[in-house]
Image (cartoon, rainbow, N blue to C red; front, side, top):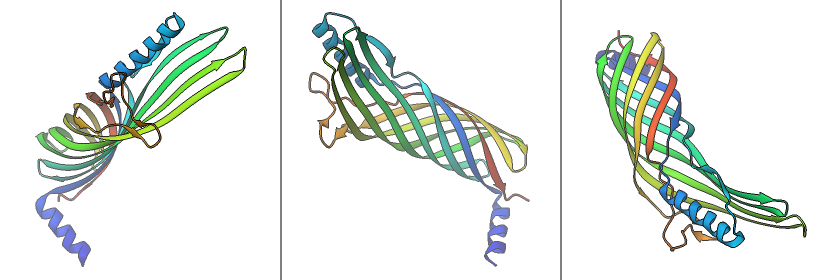
Length: 235
């Protein structure tokens, strides 16, 4: 009985449910963390009278997003879960030892979105929309100093956690080769609105040498490609 009622309701209003998985390639602003890494490199340079090498400076990298949407005519209401990561490394090594400063940065993010289908044919859709969400970020920091001659090794680690609010405008092109299957290409921009301090229970807040908070900034472009399954309740 419930199935019959649900079927009549969905058919009457021409609705869909979609479930998708997409790979995303994104750039990340990360000004605070890039600045902190530069300060740490300068400290090493001043102490050893040498120039350490910046191996990674929080580059663009791959992530993914899982989405589910409720579609009514040209209106799309969606829920997204995503993951992004990047990192930084400063390294110096010679015959006497090695100094290495690592920061691995990642986030799990959740967003609610709305989009409108500008093109809405049976096989092709072009939608434009915006989402609002929150990212829960983690910075895994590790400082390593190893002296070969005396076999001394000192390693300090920290796990800093915080959250950031963001909004993300996006354009999506969808092609449905079959009634139940679709392929999509997306292009958008992740705009970070605010961030909390990044805190470790033992080390406290993550700050630069001036005592200012150093937080990840995930702002940057997002390009994606994915596949999805849809339940079409249209007659």
